[in-house]
Length: 300
Image (tube, rainbow, N blue to C red; front, side, top):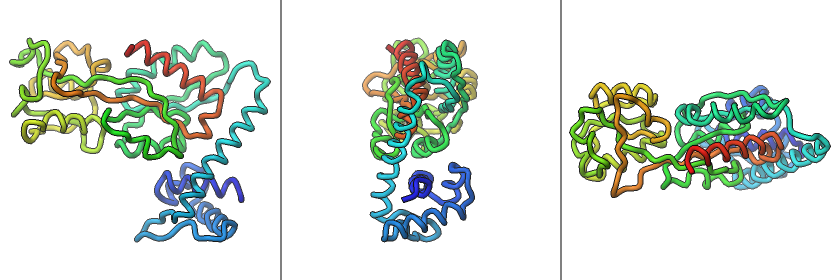
């Protein structure tokens, strides 16, 4: 079986379509279709089937896609073995993070990696919905993602991504300095009934926690939905609502007080996601190690 065809099948599953698979593989959609057809002939069984306008994998296709991930990882181990004579890893590594995670982690990561000659880091911010983080690993080496602590999001895709836990960041209630609750040491969900909420867009990780906290004693009254925490902080400081914000990232705004929640566990888990074959690269392992050390300093 052709290695490129196996990669096309794995990309079709992770990206959800031929066009998106072609984009991460840097080939045309017709090339992906040709590779899939050739792979089906070699396997002797259909690997895909139509589901309306979409192409989905058959059970045989799912099994072969899992095997394709293993093949890619084995090839990367072979390349690593061939380069084992090198004293230390060098080259380019592409790292992305959700916006507030980028603010929290990327400056320190770049500082730490500057100690290693020959290591080049290309950073980007990728603020996507919870179910879209895993697919980013097809075109990026390390994807820093976040999820509600009650959500086993990445365990649903064991063959597609490997997870390195980084830290748990508490989510606190943000209120303006003149708010009646601002002088409290902590608050409970009951204290927040009927408060106007500034929440992130639905489908994003913090939204899951915000809905659970704000709606535990009745419907949550959301007045704005904004994902940029800097904008949210400005709106809270101006008295336009309260919000649920990450403690380490947003705890220094002069016009906002962050209040810990009691009676409910509110936090987000920050993880590094890597495709199994890329996880075999010494340079990627170096980045993961530095990220873990940095996270331990930020949130011991």
